[in-house]
Image 1 (tube, rainbow, N blue to C red):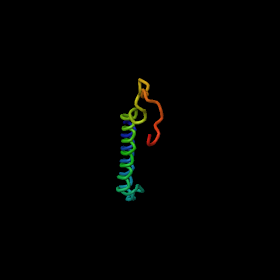
Image 2: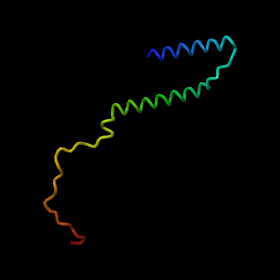
Image 3: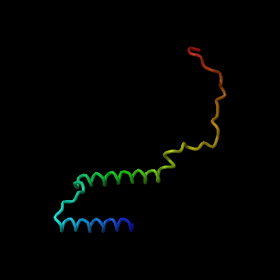
Image 4: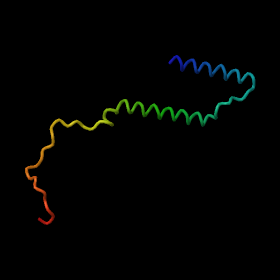
Length: 80
């Protein structure tokens, strides 16, 4: 959380400096920044889903008893 606050403060200081000097920021347009925000949200969403559903998504259901075979083990022939 501290790194986020420091990053925001540093960005504000640089932005104020650019504004005072009349320099246009080299940052991408706002629409590109929204795309980056969407990418980050999607990435974190997948991580949260894997953390929450991960054990259910990747593991096969546990079978405690072996499968029972039927008493009729003779192969069936067509028409017979």
